[in-house]
Amino acid sequence: MVEESVTVMTQESRSTSDVLHPNPRRQVIRRWRKRILRCLVVYVLIPYCVVTVIFALMQRHFMYPAARVDAISSSDAQLPDGQVHTVSVKTVDGIPLGGWLVLADGRRAEDAASVEAELAAGRPVVLYFPGNAGNRVERALDCRDFTSANCDLFLFDYRGYGENSGTPSETSLLDDARSIWDYLTSDCRISPDRIIVFGESLGGAIATHLVADVSRDGIPPAGLILNSTFSSMPDVVHWNYPYFPFHYLLLDRYQSDEKIGDVTCPVVITHGADDEIVPIHLARKLFVAAPPQSASGVRKEFIQLNHSGHNDIAISVLRDSLAEMLDAATRPVAPEG
Image (cartoon, rainbow, N blue to C red; front, side):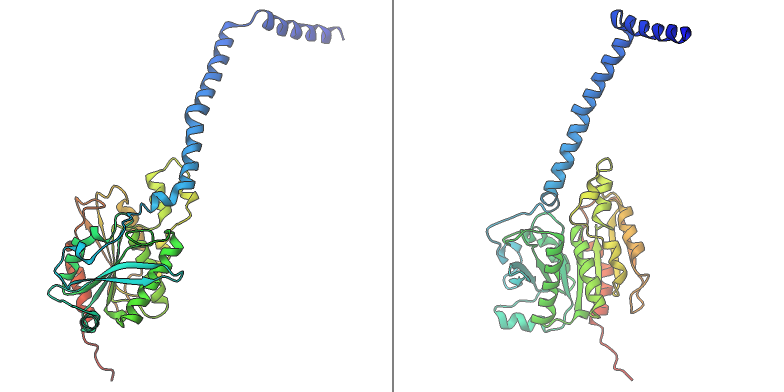
């Protein structure tokens, strides 16, 4: 009992001594710990949380930087009179989507009847899904590259872009893409095997989902060309912002790598080796997920464009692959038996 009392008294005396005569070194250490902790909270943790919350709330604003204008005219394409025609498709929720029909080089139409006659001539048709920036006026040069290959082209702005009303989202844009497909195949009476679907960047994801859906329905297009696109939106976001949890918070995910396996038409993927927005390994990941060959036996193709980035790939570099698809789309079908 005496020893225990002595021990307790010794400990109490040490505590009392620390209070009455504090260790300066310990005080400095405690003070710096508090300062460091305060700095981490104020300058790191709080800004990190604020940025994460802002992204979560504003993500669709960042993903869809819509370029709105009051009106777009066919003359804005700066192509010859009669080659470009304004067209419109009504979405499932009643929003009219404005777009262009651009006839092949050298072809003109003055009225609805002559437009119908031109589309009935049997030329291949490119259905173009653009990236997430700008509107169709900025794709006029691309239109020329495609139509110079003797094919007609349809290009629609997404909802919320150009003169179109509405707010873009993954679900709405994919539904709109199917409405556009139905317009081409039903209203315009264009056979699916005459249509080549082209998608660029975000448009590549939309094109992939559309072609996968129509392939499952047994009405695939003549081909699918994807330019500067990605495996999935979470992959892109995680690569660009590796230290933030943004990829877990995405509302619109565009999981193209989970869809492309259902595509049954020929597939060509092109990508710039120096792409600073969508790294080329994400395009290769999508390519790996694609079927080895189409239902008709055409092997998939990956074209790496050295010294090219995300936004500086000319459509003209696709001329050989496009020519092969155009040839297949216009080749007469051999009679059975």
